[in-house]
Image (cartoon, rainbow over all chains, first blue to last red; front, side, top):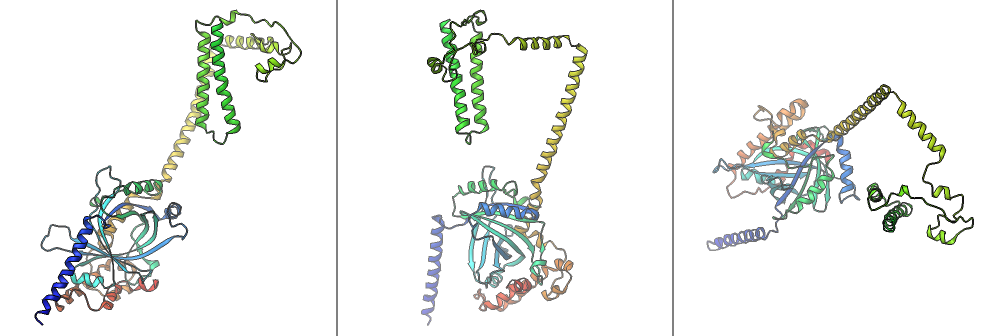
Length: 229
Length: 258
């Protein structure tokens, strides 16, 4: 019996090591989509219909009509007691309220880099993982703290590999019907993003071009997260 | 003289080609002619006109005013050679067309009218002229002001219309809410432990202030659970209870959508 246990553990260890090896080699060969190119903006609620109309004309999924989403997102923070100074690790868990069969979504987001003026978009490192509904429990067991919750509702558009989201943020409150949710502001947020492997900077130009086309309505730009009020 | 005539003929022919090509364009290709193209042709023609005028005034050309043109023969019959030479514009050279084609002075009536106008212009009082020109300037300025103010108003309304669709403050607020959760947790002094059930019955104004309550509850639950379980059991054995945990905060939202 004593002889069996180490072997089982060893196999397990070996398996996890080979998984890490595979992941590392994948990371090294730049096939993991972990860079998100990002532009952000907002539009007043009064102008949303015009923007949606414009985007329906510009984007690919015109034939199926508007594609809507209604998500609940929670942000978890993992503090590292060993390094007090460092940024705490934040993880986001997101689930679709309107589609209970859909898997939950866990996402790591790094700090966005603005780069210099010549760089068309912000870039941040992200990791997206589809997860099961027990992720919340798992994160709690890891020692993560649930920082805040919110609800987003809106529409998603695609153009090539660009993703455009027009959505509204609501404070998440228990015991509230969806139509009485309290919105965060009188505007919808607009986000254009692409997730690609490292080193595909050319996509930033595509994003700039599309952003120019909806410029009179929305100013999609790099937003410095460190300078936010 | 011969040389000067050749030069003149050459210039006039150039101008004719340009004009006819423009006319061709207008007649047969008018859907593709836009204003810049049109203006380009015009500037070419006016350039050619200038060259011709400069040529006429230059030293190489003798003073044409001093020369007389004499019609040597008038023929009332149609002349094929003439027709070919003028590209179908003139078919006979008779007494009817000669005065028009070889005229060096305006018609006497026109000339007398011109002279009267000149006379009136020279006789006008200097004061009246000054007065009238001042009046005209005033009126022109007034009209100019009107147009400028109208344009300003129009541009202002246009400028005012565009930014009405977005506001940078809202962008900042929304991004801050998305990434730091500012809008969701900037709520002072929440009660330490509060069950979600109580907040459902509370008025909406208070609910916002109580939002962090459930979060704290969760942390407490974590604190309770962690010591109970062994360190190796990171993954919970009952996923169904987890789902309940997440949902228990947002029962209503989920209920209505399902």
